[in-house]
Length: 509
Image (tube, rainbow, N blue to C red):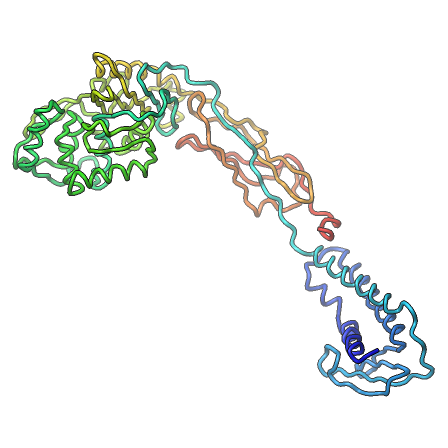
């Protein structure tokens, strides 16, 4: 046996005699009786390894009273090594010839290696057993929560029609999503930008805007083309509020052009803002080329304009303006709202429009009148509807009449319904060491909506609450249902017991 082998074996002996398995294992997480059993197994394995090495080297290994590890062999001259081959600082080894040395026994080395491998396996198993176990994970099932039935009202024969219940979502949208010229409905976006850049609250009039010679010239030019205009004179002063009233109530094309230049510095810069806001609001099928809608290249869909009106009607100043049947202006005097349905069947705005290339369009808001049993359980509700592309000999009267037919049906759409029963599976707990456990609701969920309305569903589970083992009926989170601004939350519990990881899983994983 060469010197390298001697040093290797000495290092191994130093480990076996100086390694304290009890102290090593105590650094691991405590774990019932397995801890004590493991100590005994490791100690036994250590002793077997020492005996096997004694046989392999034909030596007797002992520790003297002074802490010196003494190894006696028959063919080596006694020497003393200090701090060599061992792990304890200052330890030494002495070799001397014992009386009557023995021969190497076949298989001793194999026995030593097997014993040490077993020791390593035991230690690795202990580390795995006491190590962290992956926690269970919560997975939401493919759950669809909807109100029963479908809307039963009839939409008119316009090219595109969309009806939305404010705070609840789109009820119905028919006619496709082809882009149609929207005429003066364009002024909704123009008003949105002006109020966003120059906010007003109810009771405020805002800054004054002076009518210039250029504004007067634009008025006469548009008047000669039979556009919808409001009379102005040079030097006339209109407040921001008055200008918005003149643009939205009698639908003054020239006034909205004046507001655009005042807001952005030029009409061209204002149009850039309009398209940027359309993108930000998610109006994917809308494109603006001017603030008034006279140019038929300004196009949109009933769906997009319903979304825009829903946002605008949340602005109290805008909602107040479009609900006014008339207004008095400094030069033009008393002017009337072009929305002939205002005040009928709960209609409170918002904007009409007509251009030959696109026909008549009407976006209108309707306050719903609910039965007392429903009204007492919800905030006042409003529907936003849009009819676009109405052609014919009398497009504006036709679209206004169609709006009245729709508005009479809207209040009856609102229903109260149980959308999720108690005990309904909404998710599962998955653990690699046990079967899947269902997560179920503890009570039914009742909401106010309309037939066919689809709720958004979200399962919320706190990781700290799903540590195994878990008993049946333990709350681990909640399921959240949303329909527009209406939100309901219900606790979620385990439908069965979830056991902890087994001994075999801990050791063999």
